[in-house]
Length: 63
Image (tube, rainbow, N blue to C red; front, side, top):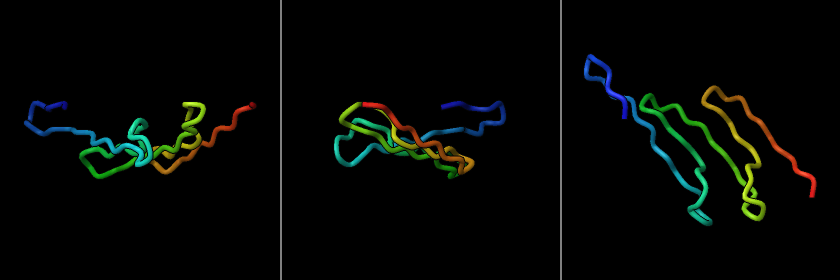
């Protein structure tokens, strides 16, 4: 947690995937802005993420 000189605090809240509770599925800051992520559990890699501004990035992997 970061505290400004005025006493305001900036926090991040983490939620984990329901299947394994291993991967962070979303992060929400103290302003209520959220970023999300999806994973390929079989390969332990990220499938898609959406940042706090709504930009998304999808990943593909060669097997």
